[in-house]
Image 1 (cartoon, rainbow, N blue to C red):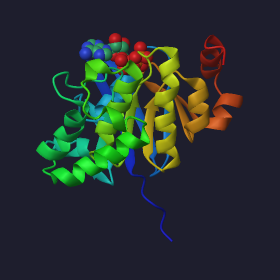
Image 2 (cartoon, rainbow, N blue to C red):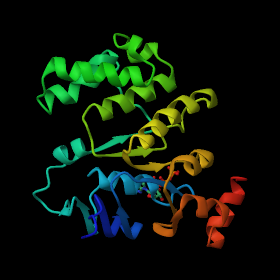
Image 3 (cartoon, helix red, strand yellow):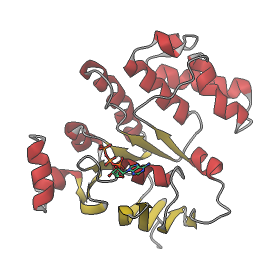
Image 4 (cartoon, rainbow, N blue to C red):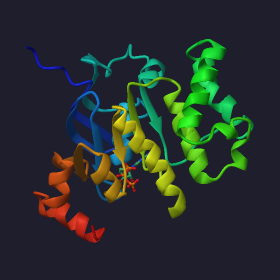
Length: 247
Ligand SMILES: Nc1ncnc2c1ncn2[C@@H]1O[C@H](COP(=O)(O)OP(=O)(O)OP(=O)(O)O)[C@@H](O)[C@H]1O
């Protein structure tokens, strides 16, 4: 039986800002249904890496393959790729003048041209799942940070992506709201969503990630199954990082 091709393959990915190398030949294979936590010190390139996977940054070398098809060529329609690879950021970026439901329906209706009642039913089901079904007609200003972030996740999910990228989605939240957002992501992991998660929440990473990649200075410095990484990091750099976080 032939081995399954990873849904996402990154090969020698290189990103520079001017002369400064921010990603220095990243290699990564992501199998369908796997959850990868991306850890590393500030400025090591974690956000830039996720942004490259979503076509938000131009890259200077290497390749990204989605279902074995290269995305690094001139004919790539990133707008279509972003329907397959959803991304949620630290800042929720909800449109303030639209209700929760209008925010969620925007891309499925305008970009994907889907049927209104079908998408609305899906949106309601997702809102139910994150405990916010009663907030569909509210405006973002009426919601807490944690609620806004859960809406941002619902909005990304309603596009039916195959992969989700999370970039420090709890970083700007008050501690009591972090849990409610992480619970939603943990639920997604249970449901088999393929995810790459940049986070500083070590306990969360330990709980949900299948694998951890530890980045440093634009490189993958260590890559290991989560359990192994947290109990016995192989490199001094990763050990130092965990010590600093007192993990
Ligand atoms: N638009 C830009 N122009 C120039 N340099 C940039 C730009 N964006 C990021 N950088 C630099 O690229 C490097 C990697 O940044 P990145 O935001 O990916 O790091 P990070 O690991 O996500 O950090 P943090 O954990 O603090 O969010 C940093 O040195 C940063 O200063």
